[in-house]
Image (cartoon, rainbow, N blue to C red; front, side):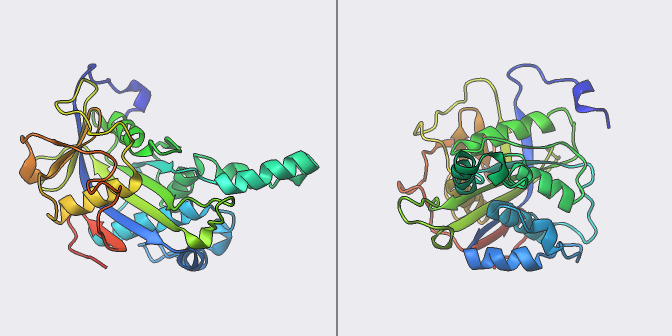
Length: 297
């Protein structure tokens, strides 16, 4: 495989399609995250040592579990992802830890800070940990970091997959709901950590699963709202389309980004805002696995 810098770039305005080969969604409580931190097992059967995850952020733990769930449900045993890349899009990763660190720095100087903040609590920490745990040697980096992470990450994914640069790409989005906030007395124990892991591949002939299309030019339908599509809404759309629970089958996530099912290709897309039910949420279960798997836990 040629280095990415040497690959030909698609012309401006070219539409890039990516097949959703697999996905898994998790919503985890603080107690479940603590258990995974101590007893996380990969699809290969290898147990990740607790020392490897000792300083990891909760969103990173959830991301590892979501990728593992998607692999277990959709790929054959021993499947290799060596040449795959990974994009991590955490939402406000390490925000509370950094608030504490800044206060300590102001009071004690640099000696009051932990050296583990940089490798484990910044934007690229999630994708870097995933690449190590699953032995992925393709590109890995963090994208977004805030509420616009869905659109930013899908655009970045399209760029990496354009022109058959990679055999596949894991896109992993995470966030807490509600967001922990010391001023409102919302601690991590009162919040759920959401993780969405998506395995994307270049488009394949006769693919009957979900597909994401990204185009730089003006899309045929504008989103219904200028508000960014949230991780939670994206989770619900993927699940609803995969399980045929939603009508229409094709949705504009952002300008130029469209999510569609196989049955809806060629039809007019529906514009959405931040939540199809007007409240940013659909009624969904605790754990979802899709794109080829019939498992629903």
